[in-house]
Image (tube, rainbow, N blue to C red; front, side, top):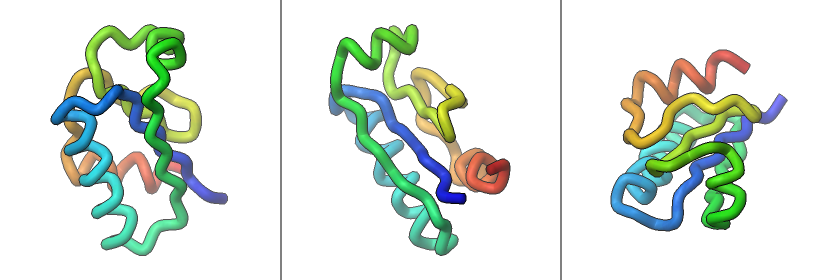
Length: 80
């Protein structure tokens, strides 16, 4: 099953860092994952996010307002 990671944010520095880090971890680990960048403000607010980035994995909100660590991303990818 392909894991879907959604990074919700309009393009702030933390959003860009989160997206880049997620891409690095996926590629380095050779994971079967789909990375999606969500910039639609209505969708972001619809998830209750007031501070970006928001990070969702397989539809579950994992973190809001912070850049995750590599270890956190790896853990989320392993949870399926």
